Image 1 (cartoon, rainbow, N blue to C red):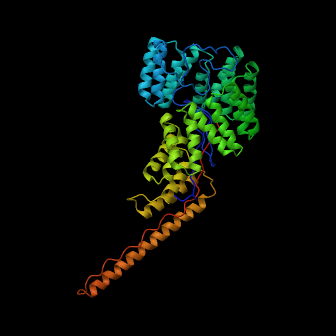
Image 2 (cartoon, rainbow, N blue to C red; image 1 turned 45 degrees about the horizontal axis):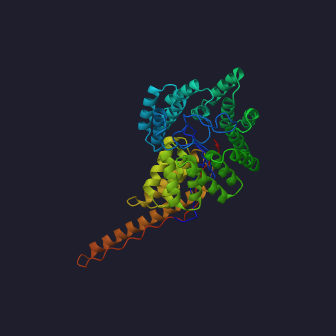
Image 3 (cartoon, rainbow, N blue to C red; image 1 turned 180 degrees about the vertical axis):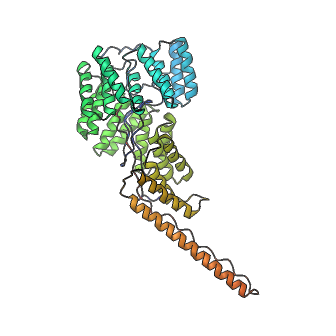
Length: 460
């Protein structure tokens, strides 16, 4: 594929929690914020660090920790929990749900298991079941941040952020809590109430000055406001507290991008993935940058891992389609773009990329004229849905030129065929002429940049 035309890249992420809302689509190539993979591995065993401000506790809403290898010393309960989380991370959601439910039948008060059950249910698109599981986790452990994080994101994703905001504010009037205060800050961030989100994050930090999740929310607001240096400072402090926090590393990658520091961004995303191989958002972010650098094979590896960890991650599916398109794989690219439209029926960018796919690639068995007509139709759909990419008009002209050229070629062939037929009828004894070689189908126009990738701004 010619390097000239680029496609719509979807969001990169900081660390996508399994319960994270779908990344926004954007016009420019961007990354998504920090979130987790399909299951949040919250340890059920007490840790030596519990009770220290800013250190990981059971239920922290940071990027989930990789479960330790199952040791003989683990209790049966924790062994079952760790096994279920590993199954979920492999993408075997039905088996993971069965395992978690079996564990909860024996240990119904195991809050982290309820949280992970909710994550698995949410990945399957069963939002009411997921919410019930998150709320059950919070009923058992009111300050479990992983459950609050997932509940906040699910509420935003399903259009109920305002009602949860009211619920959190009422709960805070009865009893203050760093976990609830941080949840409220995240809720406000997802509603784009940036000033209020900063206020709540700062209040949480006044109580626990080394609270990394609150730092991540604060940094995300700064990044969204273009205050990248300030966001970098906050995340640097968070990294000094916990150097193994994949979400912070992913967030720093996005900040480096905001500062036009692409090599550093690539390194941060790779560091996050090394800590969390199932970190869908970090893989999506890395894949998006590799697509931009036209390393389509490398991008495909990262993006296939992202959609395996998070099957409903629309941005990753769009970027994976772009990687397939870059490799010239029409059927797979088409399937990924169609998958995005299943997940986000109102999305615009898939139509733009579908237009470029049909404009640039020539799949075997597809009529050239039909292909070009489809390209034009998809680009028109992009416009009708409010797409504003300024290159659309030129791409439509390219498609129309191709349609006109192919139409004229067919008309010439038709006339030549009639002329030869008439000549053959007038001179029946003449030896038949060899069939004229049809004119070759014109190749695709030079590859042009398309709608760029999206970066979810979400840092958590």
